[in-house]
Image (cartoon, rainbow, N blue to C red; front, side, top):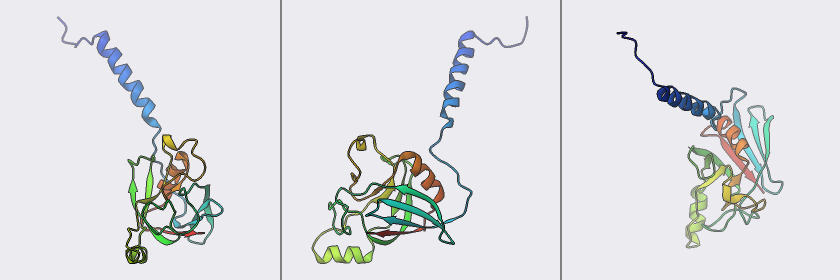
Amino acid sequence: MSSTPVISRRAVLLGTVVLASLAGCGASKFKTYSGPRVSSVQVFKAKRRMYLLSEDQKVLRKYRIGLGGNPVGHKQFEGDSKTPEGTYIIDRRNPNSAYYLSLGISYPNSVDRAYAAAQGKKPGGDIFIHGEERKSSGRGRDWTAGCIAVKNREIEEIYAMVGNGTPIHIFR
């Protein structure tokens, strides 16, 4: 009698199915970037454009963007659907975002909080650069609650290129 293990056809078939399904998982939303460091992000709301800049202020990448549903003016209060204006910092990352991937913007800052408090209101928060949500399809250009939206393939690139602590300048 042989001591060589016998592998059943079922085990071979199961192993083949598992390997085939793992091979299909090769497309990851997490990309790598090895180019020049992104030293700042600039957003021009009126032009619906966002730029990633290098240390020498060269544009590394540019994107068309969507904004809050009420894009004119600076975000001041929770629920106003405006995208903030001013200088903030990329301060967090969400790899499990409902909007594919997202990078947090440090809104509200102390000035934003003080202004809202003086008006007896909340400043809002949870402002991100993010990808798309299935439900956003067909909503038009400005559909977020105050965030900056790009296509999913673009947020993959941005997520890889922009680190926490990077300044973001948001202009009218």
